Length: 292
Length: 282
View 1 (cartoon, chains in turn green, purple):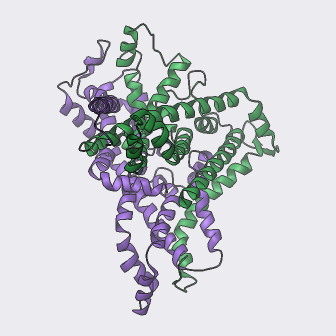
View 2 (view 1 turned 90 degrees about the horizontal axis):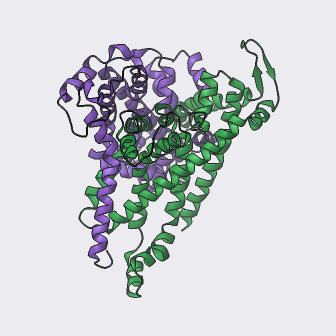
View 3 (view 1 turned 30 degrees about the vertical axis):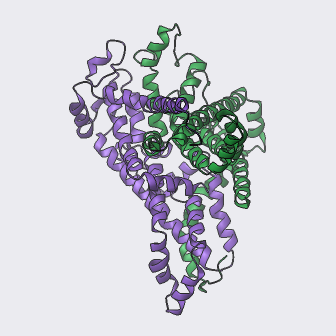
C-alpha cells in the first residue's frame, strides 16, 4: 500500500481501460459464452438451440471417449512432469558442483526454452519417423519394432519425450537457483559430521529444495495439460485410436472438427474449473513462501 | 563444492556432457537433414553429417517456398511472426504497466473489482476457451489480420502483477518529492516510474517475445489466408502438405528458421531472460 497517491478520479480508469476492455471482450465474454453454451444443445443444422440443463455434462461423464481423455491426460501430465523434473534435477545438481564451467553448461542447457512446442513436436516426430528416423533404426537393432502411427504406447512415449525435452531448460534453471540458495555452511557441517554426498543430498539438499520442487510440480502439470497442444497437433493429432487425445486437444477437436459446440463448451467449463484449482494451489504456495 | 572428490567431478561432467548431447540431438538431426538434397532420404536412414545443400535449401525456402504446399515463402512467414511477437510483447507491456500504475498510485471506487477482473484472466488460457474466443474474433471481423493475431492475446495478469510488485518497492519519498516539485501523475510516470523499471521491462520483453513468436493454436485458427501465416503455424501445414512426397530437407530447414530468432534472443540476453523467467513466476 502506498501512502502517497494521486487524487485524480478519471485518470485511473483511462489507464485501466485498454487492459479491462481486452479482458472483457476476449476473456470474460468468451468464458461466459462457454458457460452459457454448455447448457445448450444445437440441432444438426445449427438452426435451433434448446436449453438442456446439465445434460452436456452428464453425457461427458458417461462418454467412454471423454473418460479415456481424462486418463490419457493424467498419464501424460505425470509422465512429462516426472521425466522432465528428474532429468533437470540431475543436471542442476551436476552444474551446482562446477565452479568455472557453470555459465557454459547453463547456456548449453537453457536454449530449448525458446523452441516452440509445435517445432519440438516436428523435430521429435522426424527422429522417430518409422521409415527414415534414427531412433526406430537404433531400436530395430535391438529388436524393437517402433511404430507410433499404430502403437498406442509408442505414440504416448513420443509426445511425452517431445514435451519433456522442451521443459527441461525451465526446470533446470529453477532447480539450479534453488540449489544455489542453500547455504554451503549446512552441507559443510554435515560433511564434517561424516555424511557422504548421497546422505547429504537426501538429508539436507532435497528437503531444503522442496519449495522449488513443489512449485515446479504445479508449473509442470499446468504446462503438460495446457501448453502442449502444439506438440500433440504436430505429431499424433490425438491418435492412434485416441491414445494421445489430451483434454485440451479434445476441446479443440470436438469444437472445430466435430462441430459439437455443446460438448466442447462443457469441456471448456471443466477445464476452467481445473485451472482454477491449480491456480489456487499455486497462489497459496506463493503466500507461504513469502512468509518464510 | 564441499570436498574434493575427483570421481564425482568426473561423473558430473559426464552427466552434463550427456545431457547437453541429448538436449541438442533433435536440433542436430534437423540441421543435418536441412543440408541434404531430396535424394539423401531415399536410402532408408537419415545421414548423421551435414551435406552440400545448405545454402541451396535455405535460400529456396526463404525466397520461394514450396509451391505445392500452399504456404508462402518462409521469409514472409517469419516477417508475420516477427510482427505478431513484437505486437504481443509491446502490447502486453504497455497495457500492463499502465494498469499497474493505476492500481498502485490511485484510490478509486471499484479498484478491487478491477484488480480481480485482471487477475481472473490467469485462469482462462486461450486453449481452454478456444471456441467462443474464435467466435468473438470472427464476429469482430478480425480474422486474417495482424490485429486479430495479437490483440486477443495481450491482456496479461502476470505482467500487471510484476509491475505492481516493482512499483510497490519504489520509495514513497520519490513520489512526494515529485509532487512537491509540481509533477502531475503522468509526468511522474514518464520521468520516474518508467526509467526505474527499465530492466524489468527489458526482462519481460525477452520472455514475451518468445511467448508471442511460439504461438501455435491461435494463428493456426484465425489465419486462413496464407498472407498472414506465421512460421510456427505454417510449418505444420507444410509438413502435412508434403506428406505424400516427403521433402524432409525443406521442412527441417523451415524448422531451423522457426527456432533461430527466439534461440538467439535467449542466448544473447541470457541474464535478462533468467531475470524475466524468475520474476514472472513470483
